[in-house]
Length: 187
Image (tube, rainbow, N blue to C red; front, top):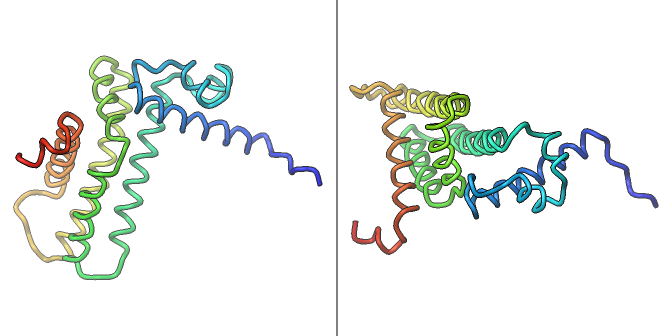
């Protein structure tokens, strides 16, 4: 029996997925600046043409990787708030999710590299800031839901709490990147 032939759209999707995977691996191993388009296509088993038929630049590819990471984090958080239980249980699950995310989410170094690149590239800065703004709005909405459900009127606004919480999580992730695990035992 002859194997089913994939449609053009399906082949293109598979190519993009392999390029995403290769780029993610290479960016995490070598860093964004040290990874060339050639490194990515070689790891994915494609040519430069395949890369440029899917992405305009490495920055575009990095932006898509960040969007995927943000979407995954949002889906995890959304699932927590859709579970049954009291607002207090939702809060506990959300905090546990952030702690797990802090320890397990591999993509944080990509965000750090994106923030550094954004300092020097105005167009890229706009894309990264848009992703971060979207993330803050989503978290703010969840916090607002918790505040409303708990009938606790906290003085800070939900958006201020979201910014503080995301900043705390990112700061802890940055700390864990800079120091070995046993260094945090005494902190």
